[in-house]
Image 1 (cartoon, helix red, strand yellow):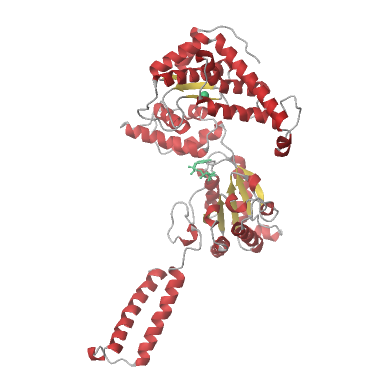
Image 2 (cartoon, helix red, strand yellow; image 1 turned 45 degrees about the horizontal axis):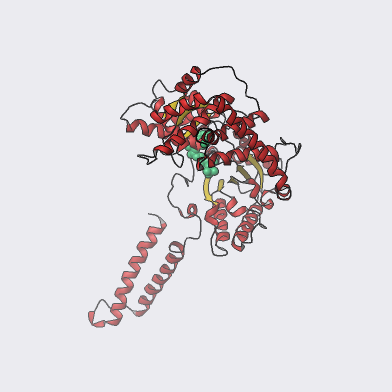
Length: 516
Ligand SMILES: Nc1ncnc2c1ncn2[C@@H]1O[C@H](COP(=O)(O)OP(=O)(O)OP(=O)(O)O)[C@@H](O)[C@H]1O
Ligand SMILES: [Zn+2]
């Protein structure tokens, strides 16, 4: 029986006996047994003490993050996780880098002898869903450490002092159960630069975290792993030596890593012979580990829905589409006129992408998904790390081709290009301000420059976008037949896949040169 149950039982017994004794005192005629007053007082006092103990220990308001109150394990707060590096696919260099920390925790005396200090804080940063939590758990698993999960937002409270108290409690527990890995997800929720906004409660919480990190000595084998999507927002005090001084970037996986992640997540799933994991990895450029895990699971669900006993490549394709483009809208009420516009718009993207060879167009569709009325699924042929100025210009043309096609065919433009404009403008801005690819010269411009030279910068961005748009329009004019052909098939069939698209292009094949 655990302590809480035992105390509850004793308290209930105490309360029952005390009540009987009170009755005995008030109604002597009941003759409940002639118990001396001094014994009654002893029983009452003991019950009162037990009552206070119970309230203090078990009924106090929740003053600590969920992890500290949980008596039972659950998957996230699993105190001793059995996750190991084997469960983390790819990320080889990162695992290697963490090997040293693992060795520190497993053999502290080896390092202490040499006077080396255990690294206290490690910061994982990068886009969401890339395995930061998984990796932290694996470090705990590899070292048989206690894993304490807390999310930065759990410390943020209205009342001053509550967050700080939670931080204190978290570290107390960590020291008690050492060796411990404390994982603080979304650390930016408490760790943003203190001068950015004055928030007394948040400042106190952050200060407490700094105090705790400075406070524990190297005999406590406690390692804190923080995770954030925004390293740039963090207070410098948090990043100083002795605190979170190791920064590890965890980005989206490359093709090989995607293949490995897919393998991990399809390990226990029956796949039929049509499934080639390598090809799926090729088609999922830019997706995170969490997206890939999601695709593997979605594919299995789709196969079950179809009453199949194995998962096929079609199930994977449907899952990829669902994850990339959102849920298919059933019975959409799109007007025929709008459908025509969407067909021309999407066909425009496909034609220009194909001719400028920006990305491989896998599928075009005018079946609404999520917020989009239509979409073009495209993936780069391979992982790219360097892009030339020409390639960026081509990307802009492909993005603006939807609007250009509307202009060309209907002599009218619609609101459907909002997303495309956002993306194209972003690329053009980066070309001017970050990559030094405009007549302004080889320089990178920060927010300060942008604010004070806004007109000049905007002119350069506009010139790039105008050139890209003009190029798209020209390509579409010269290929108006293909554009109409694709749009008509889209109207009729709603989707066109890679092979069908290739066939249409082959019908109109001619040598071309469209350099801007
Ligand atoms: N490298 C990987 N190997 C295997 N699975 C992975 C990998 N990366 C991500 N995953 C899968 O994605 C899920 C989510 O990853 P995780 O929660 O660790 O991401 P995160 O970076 O902490 O995300 P967030 O920043 O949103 O908190 C994992 O539970 C796992 O299933
Ligand atoms: Zn578009």
